[in-house]
Image (tube, rainbow, N blue to C red):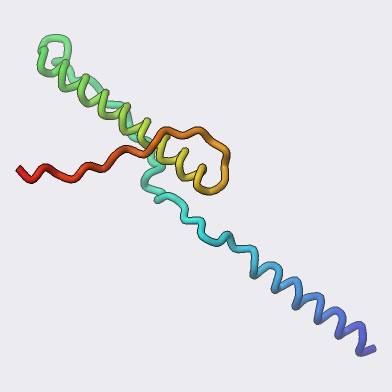
Length: 100
């Protein structure tokens, strides 16, 4: 009667070791804040009558689009580093600030 108890105990203990070793080592997920969708800029009322308001809206829309594509590239490179076979854009160059 002791033998089945010992076999059951060893089986449960070995399952616990297997489950404990299931962690994914080295994977750091991107911050959740980067997954928030940024709303597209809404044109102001005076965009039809003011050239400057139109240009500001165009600039805001352009920056919004560039930020979105930068995020896509960042996500692509993250998953590429974690083993997916992807063709990602290169990371943007980080230039030091001008001393002058």
